[in-house]
Image (cartoon, rainbow, N blue to C red; front, top):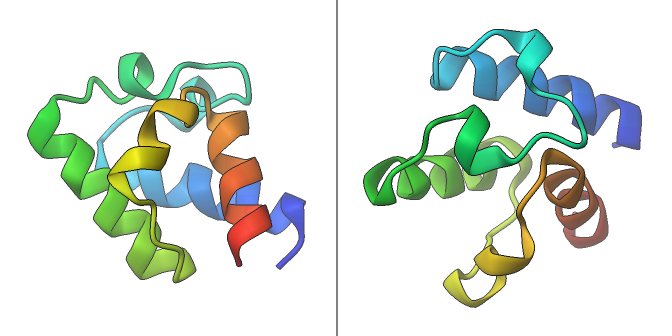
Length: 79
């Protein structure tokens, strides 16, 4: 999957799952703020990424995934 495909799929999937406007999901945007995540919805995010991209994000790696660009990089490097 190319980076462009990852970006498009992340944007489509997360905007639908977390009911936010797709335009808010930009590479520089902070994931937690944009999706208004709490600890429970963070688990949902990890599950959605794992289901959609077949990429598991261990709890130890979560602090390094702050922006959507970080998420794109993580998915791209672990697929």
